[in-house]
Amino acid sequence: MSAQPSTTTSVPRHIAIIMDGNGRWAKERGLPRTEGHRIGAQSVEEIVEACGELGVEFLTLYAFSSENWKRPKREVDTLMKLLEHFLKSKTPKMMKQNVRLQAIGRLHDLPQSCQDRLHKSIEQTSQNTGLTLILALSYGGREEIIDGIKSLVESVEKGHLDSGMINGDVFSKHLYTRYYPDPDLMIRTSGEMRLSNFLLWQLSYAEFYITEVLWPDFRKPQLIEAIRVYAERERRFGGV
Ligand code: FPP
Image 1 (cartoon, protein in one colour):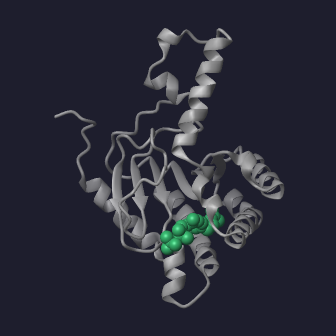
Image 2 (tube, rainbow, N blue to C red):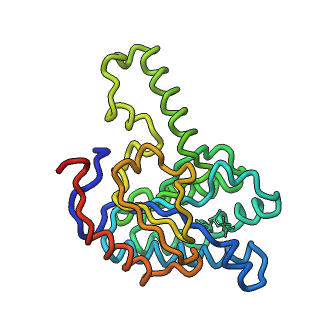
């Protein structure tokens, strides 16, 4: 599949989201951070449903970064349990909504039970033809680029690829995201103006939409507003 983002400016074909602000949302309410993640999972559910309804084809969610392993063990464990529970309890809904689940990242870093559940849900939903939901898990953009370079070098060494043929399109085929088009729109909640190692290669031409809204409060109306702002922008891919 082409790595170029779509050129239509109505509903983006691929939306990528940095779901930030769960901790702050909880802190504002005097709740433990994990409560922010729990309500954040409800936002995930609502946004997946809304994307399906709006005709978005791909949704990539930054659910756990390679840096997130540095958080306190209790928080990491809670996030892994939450993910496993989400996959188990929401796969029937994904089936009903025709959602195809995929995942990117160093998935072998995840606890075994989480990996097993993830692969079960991916397998179960693999024939669905609606929204493709891509969870970025133990994901880092630099790590992905390094893994891509290793894969390219291996192809050259095995004689499957002539090094003179390497270009952007060829490299894209060695990334975790090789089956998906590049995102058209990147949304980040909670106001930070950073990429945080998310889809470094793939976001080259994406429109960015940063909102102060914290992830647990980011629901369908906020998504529609992001898409409205996106649709108003003219996208020229460096042309005139
Ligand atoms: C950032 O908030 C969020 C995360 C590190 C994890 C995202 C996880 C979820 C939304 C819930 C589970 C996911 C799925 C797919 C079911 P933060 O903790 O960095 O917030 P802060 O910056 O306010 O501290």
